[in-house]
Image 1 (cartoon, rainbow, N blue to C red):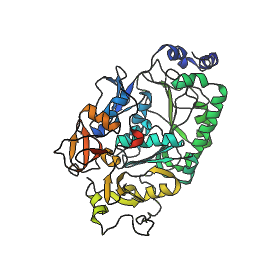
Image 2 (image 1 turned 60 degrees about the vertical axis):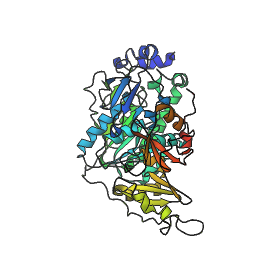
Image 3 (image 1 turned 30 degrees about the horizontal axis):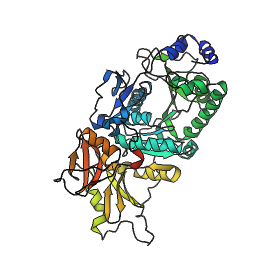
Image 4 (image 1 turned 135 degrees about the vertical axis):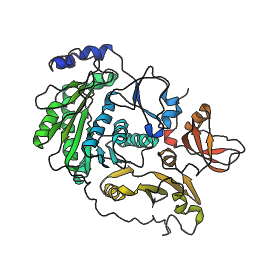
Length: 469
């Protein structure tokens, strides 16, 4: 049950919130997914109506066991609340306003990654997204989801306080702040959100939200756009906070472009343009979203980077390069032949060989100097002794692996689940020895090293399925 103080607050906020408390108590949450167009756009069998504001989103008629669906682990779809998918519509529209050129986007509060991937997919080709998460554990989940989605060549993941972005002046065309909040919009499906709610929590969240906005504002270039959102209803974390911020920074509110969709409610707060998703009026959870434009000229060029740094191969303890050019077994040129694109430059860092997008290499160097990056270009190979071991990132990243590089072996669903549990896999005797790419329904699942009598499972150990059927 909702706290009476919370109900009283909703009743005092205006007619647009009429009936919201009843909807939170008496209606059920929707289940929805966004499909990965870059991997073929596989739609789950239980998919129903499309999400109106996201061409890739679908409501499901029931909640399947996602954990035991290999397609989810392959990054063919992502389980995401329909309301938050509005970011696809917003970023698509802002990209058009910015001329359809390659852009840089910062998602400042990114975990677990649904909004990051939604925003990245909506950007023009050759764009780059930086996804940051304060909490280190959640940052690892974010990294995992970016890898599975196949977006490692266009999404950098960092972790830590957003204060670090205050040093990156005028670097991003779009900054998204889906701010940590009191979670009122999640009360329909989250008992913890109902239990922990109080006025003190609202005040604490509003203070943290203002700090985040102050931290990231310098990184937004003049003429760029800030997309601010929360999953809560109260005015203190939404209209009041963002209205004061806009006034303090001489920013202007922009139309979200969402008012044409049935059920989405425009804010009635004076001077603020925003959209609200209210359970009971739309098929989704609670969300507040608005757009600010930073004053200044809207240039058609990305700000110049700092000079790129030419990095030498990492040194071993013996003082030699970690990759010896005289040893063909671990020559990095071999890895270059694995790639289906020439737009990626290889870099050796310790025992990892990373593919950096050439167009963003100098900017990624700048990010590494200022942020704690945990994913900056896909690691495509790991050096183990005299072996170059292909990585899961190489298997998952869309369009990165040349199709004829490794033998492929199609598995059935029980075998796919054994692989995802990181159990031993046995392949047919005719399967070539060495590294083999397993596929399920003709989509990459991951690598094994076939030894003949058995195959070593190379699925990342922290990601393995632990639940029982």
